[in-house]
Length: 464
Image (cartoon, rainbow, N blue to C red):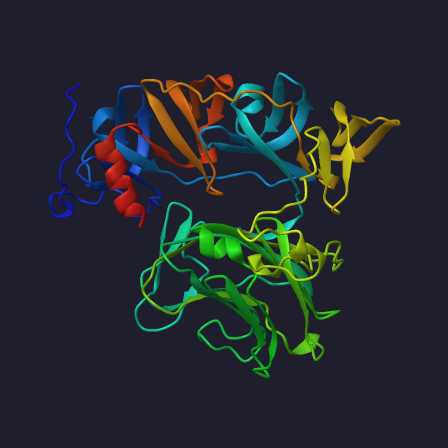
């Protein structure tokens, strides 16, 4: 079969053979041409693509393919916790913790079964409680409403991206006590409004709910109904120093408490003394006020128990110099004169802020047993926030010919050498985890030629 190079394909030259079929996948080539359709077959050297505008499936060399955008279809979650393993080159793999030792960490995943990761390639492990999600996404623009005549937001690769000032909103059936979390990325200074408990999805200024305005490191919270300001903080230093963050807002219409978390750390807690549950809508908005691009991904909405189990550090002060004892401990150049306490590398951080010195003995049925200096302790895995692994000299996996970068729907990704393709599966290899068999349905995008600088420049251009 003759393989064709990437080319511009004109729809007018063909008859649409199957317009009723929903096209959910796209292939993009090195010259930025795109073609919607579906994968007919895939090998380590070529892609065969079928499309309604093609008379028959067409083969393409993988060396000319930039990426595939696919329709990811994760199953419903049943586990009570999720462990995120970050590898030394940035890959993030999520699953349920199966075992931990000085040599390896094992995860149970829905997309590749049990995966065993070499300790030398693991940079970090974070553990989070996995609630029953009311909404996870985005998976497209369906169900979302944009304000104004011209859409201000676009969708691509599991991300919303702003292209102008405006709102994108959705009724997510917020419960009275809820958590709203998302990943944000931006260029330059971060500017965004998050509105929750809105009753008017078409407006940038709904009459119910709360509006949280983010301007660089400062955040302002006000009531949409009364226009009353409920709080302000300038402690969001990470938003000024970085260009991405995980943001979470927890709200209780029963107590009026509103908590803000950045990258897992609580920043502030405010209270609305005049909260009226019956007057609230159930929608959320993301609103940009200028043309500086913002990306939103990994949106998760879940119920919350309303318990504020951790309070902000009153001495944080947004990175400003402290007065009193803390201020006296600082020298003129801003460094602490008091000796720093050595961190115990074998401590386990708990979700309530406590920590335990101990080593993992076993993990069974969602329960972890820790050996402490006093006795063995048995806890649910979701009670943990992080595990301190044995200190080692970390290694970065070697680059391999044929490496691909495969993205999951939540925005995390994994790199492996593509070794084979079967019915609905990919076989891959990495120094970090050996050989694995992945379900293609797990991936929202697969990137090829990931070490070619020409391709990377094109990927970065399209990303922003």
